[in-house]
Structures are given as structure tokens and as C-alpha cells.
Image (tube, rainbow, N blue to C red; front, side, top):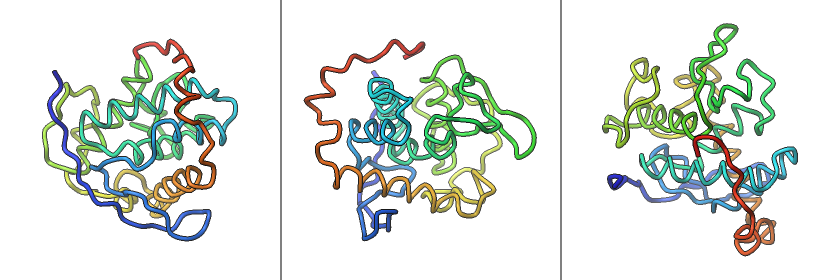
Length: 209
């Protein structure tokens, strides 16, 4: 049985793209604010090429892997959206690498790590985030070969990932903005991806899921 995970509670407030204040949790180690089905619907809305069933599968994987290590699934999912341009990719990292956070991809250099399945790529990202946020041991077996390069407990929230995880000093603001947009999407579109509708969507057979 997987060990209990740590959640740091307490939602903070940050301005989102839709204007006004919307509640998000910018802590790396924390509880999600956005329901699984809403994250999936938001991804599908931003990139219709990702069908709702596939989007739901990814959202569930982030919930499962993030919760296991105590990492905020909303932040990790937002990071995936940012790094992959809503799973459109097109940058250094290619879709077949199952690398959703630019792990090992250097500016103008290496294309990054390759993982055997989406779940393993998400797990490696979650492990990396936990290393940045805490000095706690992993609950699972380490699969990320770049963990040794991380300065532990150097980024406890989204803003501190700018200049640490990424060279972009505005990286954290972009993550918080994406999380705020997901919350605003849920608030403004309560009919989007209702749980009753998604309950009938079959999860596609993603390898390693």
C-alpha cells in the first residue's frame, strides 16, 4: 500500500487572465483546487486535438501521481500545459518522449529525457517537483536521473520555480496564471465536463497507465 502523502492546506489568491481574484494554491506541495474533470475539459478546450477521454486520462494520472508524493496536481498539470503548449509540443521536446516538463532539455541544447509511458514521464516530473520543494524522501522508487542536480527545498511555490526549474524569470507567474485560468474556466463554465458526463467516457489504453 502506498504511504500517506502530505498536503499543505490553505488556498492563496492570485489574479488570473479572466480578471479578478480567483483562488489557486501556488504551493508545490499542496492540495488541488481544480477538479479532475475540469482540468481535462480545460485542456480539451485549449487544444481540441486532445480528445476529452485522453485529456481526462492525463488529468487522472496527475492526480494519482501527484497525490502519492504530496505534490499539488494543479501546479504539475499547469506546468505540463506550459511546457508542452497544451500538448501541442513543437519545441525541443517531442510528444513521443513522454517528457511533459522539459526534464533534461537545455536551452539550445539537449532535447531532454525519454520515458517509456506517459505515467512514467508524469511520475518523473512529480518527483522533480518534490525535490525542488522539500527535503522529504520520495514515497516511490526514484526514476528521474536528474534528481541529483536539484537544490532541495529551493522552490516551495510556483513563483520560486522561475530561475530555478526554468531560466525564465516569469515562469512562476505563467504557472499561476494557468492555474487561475483553470479555476476561472470552472467558475464561468459550470456545465463544462460535468462529472455525470465524464463518468461515461472510457479511458483510452495509454501504455503504462
